[in-house]
Amino acid sequence: MESLERLAGTLSSLEDLQSIVRTMKALSAVSIRQYERAVRSLASYNRTVDLGLRVVLRDMPSARRRSRDHRDAPAGVVIVGSDHGLCGRFNEELAAFLLEHVRSRGPLGARVLAIGSRLPPLLEEASVRVDAALVAPGSAPGIATTVNRLLVRIDAWVADDGVASVHVLYQRRRSGARGHPVAQRLLPIDLHRFHRLEQEPWPSPVLPTFGMGREQLFAALARQHLFVTLFRACAESQAAEHASRLSAMEAAERNLDERRAELLGMFRRQRQEAITAELLDVVSGYEALAAGPSVADSTIENPRPDT
Image 1 (cartoon, rainbow, N blue to C red):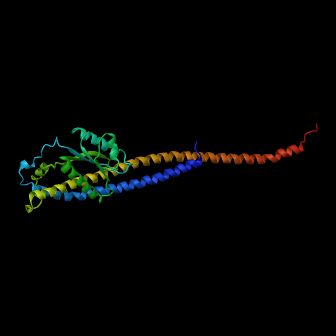
Image 2: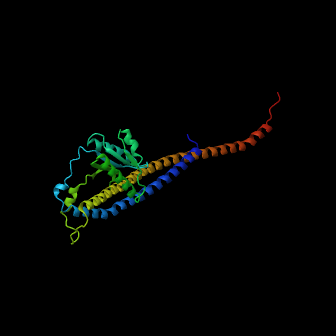
Image 3: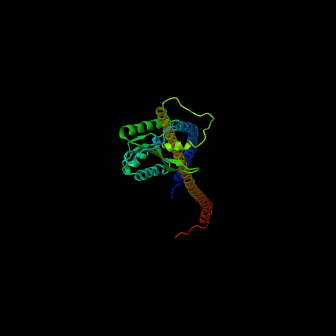
């Protein structure tokens, strides 16, 4: 049985852990709102880019819109993980999803670009070579820098390695719950999606036009479309990571509360037993002192006879 001093020290350590867990819960809750606001603020800009591509593709012959067959071309995968732990099986689920995604599309020869330092070791254990690993953005403003670096890497894939198909894999947060892995195609761009937008009425009475070259404008808008797609993937991944961390911290908080209640009960029982033992010692000492004089008097009054 542990001593009272050890139990008191363990309870103090548990209280410190509870304080840390509560702080991490608060930070995760605030971070989730931060990244969700970033995704919502991107919606209007994404709408503008979509409308621009709709205008550029409006008079383009449908034959030029068809995507070529890229099944025999090298493929690339961008996977968005985390730099920090304490978020459950966030990265493990992503690594398993990557293996399933790549195997369903052919041999494990895809070029892989990872975001976050936690993913590469997991992928290397599964014999997946990672071309490069970028640091995960630590805040919503930092996502733009990460996305620009990703675009440079993807440009190098396309120009130097002939990569024609690129997907981004990340965790998307469910409403009020942890995330689940999803895959989204980056390249080739789905031009049929913008063709379907032509069926919708234009949002203003003025028909749009443009003065610069169609190819130049299309390239600029297509790059902004990729930027928006990657930005949303990173922001949603960060929100899902913090949601997983919040869930893990809530489970840790429940375990700490249960353990603290158990130790507190043990501490109180042992303290009560110690107090009871001390009281018994005091009572026994008092009784011994109280009985001492009467024994001495009886000895004097009845001395032993000489032998």
